[in-house]
Length: 399
Image (cartoon, rainbow, N blue to C red):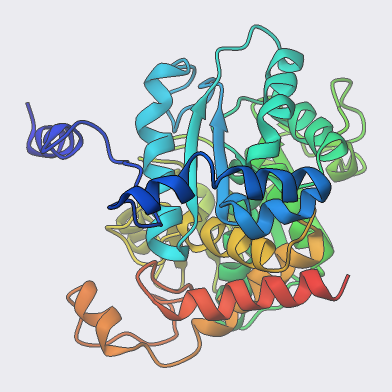
C-alpha cells in the first residue's frame, strides 16, 4: 500500500471513523437545561415557528445549515461509485464548509432510481435547511435536477461541480489575462470538455465579457450543425467554420481551459498558441498536460491546474464556503449570476493584495506575490471569508 493511500485511510478511520460529529450549541448539564432543550420548553419555539415560519431562522440552526447532497453518479474522477461510496467526499465537503465559513452541514447520500425521485426526496427534506449544495451528480441529469429544485424551493440551490468551478476559473482567468497582457473581451478561448463544468465556466465568462469561446468535446467542435445539442450547451455552439477538432481551433488561441481527461492536450498544440498563452489544465488528479511539459515547450506560458502540488490551484474550496456564507447571511432565496460574478471579482482582487505571513507559513513559503505563479488566493487565506462572502452578500442584497 503506498504511503498516501495508507495515510488517507488512517485519517478517515482513526481515532473514530469518519470526519464529522454533531455537537450541541447549548448547555445540557442540569435538569433546568433539559427542560429547556426538550420538553416542556421546546414547545415554545414550536408554536412560534408554526405561527410564523420565518421564526425557524431565529430559533433553529436552519439559517446556518446546508445539505450536501449526492446520488454518487459522478464521484471525483472515479465515475459512478454509488451513494454509499460517495460519503467520504460529502463528509469532506462538510469539513471545508465548517472550517472555512462556520457553516454546519448534513451530508446526504440518496439512492434514487430516477432524477425525479431524487428531486422529490430533496424537496421533502428541504424545510430543514438554509441551502442545498448538489454534488457529484452526472450530466445531463445534474442540469435537470438543479433547474427543477430552483423552481420548487425557496432556498439557495447550487451545483458546485458546475458553478463553483466556474467562479474560480473566472477569478483566476481575470488575473492570468492581466499578467499575460491580454483582455477577456479580445481573448480567443478554447475549452476542451463541454459537460457540466465546462459549459458553466463558459457561460459565466460570457456574462463577464468574453466574446470568442469555442467548445470542444469528444465529438469535436461544438457548432450549430451538431444534431445532439441540448438546452445546456446550445447557446455555446458557434456557427460552423469548417473547424472540426481541437487541433483545428488551437492555432493562435490565447487561452486553453481543459475540463476533460489526463494528457488530453497534445504538446504540439501548445506550440501553436498565441504569444503569452494561458493553460488551465483542470482534469483531476492528472491534468490535460503537466506544467513541466508545457513549460518545457515554451517559457511564456502561464499554467493553472486542479492540484495543490503545482502553482495556481483552481480549487472549489475558494468558492462554495464563502458563496453560501454570503447567501445565508443575506437570507437569499437563490444563487444568482450577479452573486457568482461578485465572488469571482472578489477572488481576483484579493490575489493582487500582499500575502499575509500566516498564509506563507501554512504553505512553507518565504514569499508570494501576484504574477505567473500566483493568480488566485490560497485556500488557507483567512481574508477570503470577509472578502468573498461579503461581496456575495452585498450582491444578494442589491437584487
